[in-house]
Image (cartoon, rainbow, N blue to C red; front, side, top):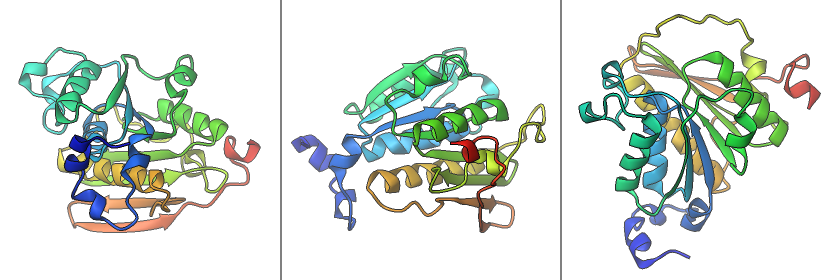
Length: 241
């Protein structure tokens, strides 16, 4: 049940047709990676009233992060991202319960980190842990909300096998991996907010707009394209599920 304070806090969004704040309050959402993508999605999920946010990142804040990672400031330099993110989110919305995982996600800790979560938000910047998340998503039957950025370009998708394809139907291990990805703040901000919106829609029982689809955003031309991601019958992950 919502408290009087919560009713006032969310009074504008509950006017939206089909909105159910109680469903958001009961949700368990995992955000893996608290960089540009994860900063945006975690902040807006907390502001929307997601009841429990699981935050995972083993990194510390660096000066080069601050052009795009809005959870942090210069006073955060050298501090653990998961601790700073928790502090900032807690200040924004104290009613959100925060579960902290000060770790880089890998095959050894993935099951423990994901346990109890209903949806996974990808805020990562490398492929290997993305494939681990995707595999766990398929095994557990929970949605995986993909996000990626490079320069002016950004990508977002909502994968929920067996209803949809999985990330491995779209990408394969060994895909191009630059050492340092060019990025500026608006691109991960835009994609992270789209990811948060898809999570909220799914939590409310609505059909996510990107279910089984990939959004391609080009900030240079301010253009959007959405393509279908078809199931790969030879996919090494979801075809065996």
